[in-house]
Image (cartoon, rainbow, N blue to C red):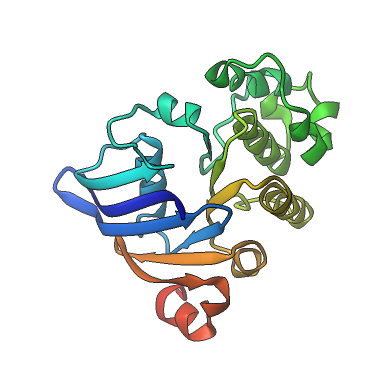
Length: 231
């Protein structure tokens, strides 16, 4: 059963089409990796799902509910957590203040203990400004902020970009734990093949705004990589 279903989705910037009849089914409990060379529409698709960009046509459903007419904040309340490319934390706010930003969305009072179980460093740095953290710590903070919503679907846009290898591994462990132990469905954009193959259960490749290959992650063969991902 698909938790998130995108059907015949089209999107344009002015007169330039960016997405062409994209179909994407994210099964409940899966870890789906959206892949493709730079500029192929991956981030655009995620922003459309989150309601941050308008769509020209097509349908999007989450748990059977139509998303297209809902504002971004309503989609978050439904249980979709979003970690944007570049993290977009608030650099002048403390770690605690960044985390508490998400509390109002689901009308909670406290940051869930899960956030600190996954990323203990955040508990040690609650009073530190977000802008003073390392890139990897900022990424952990961005993921933690999304988890404050207690999402059933977690969307991550290039979570390993510009991050030191040790924290990349920690983030991978956190994603697997969220999925395998807590049942959180994951949709991520990822360029690093070793990380994608370790984390994902399924893949979908976009090329010039179209889905050109998809399947189980074991079907992401070297031939598929050469055809659609090699630069």
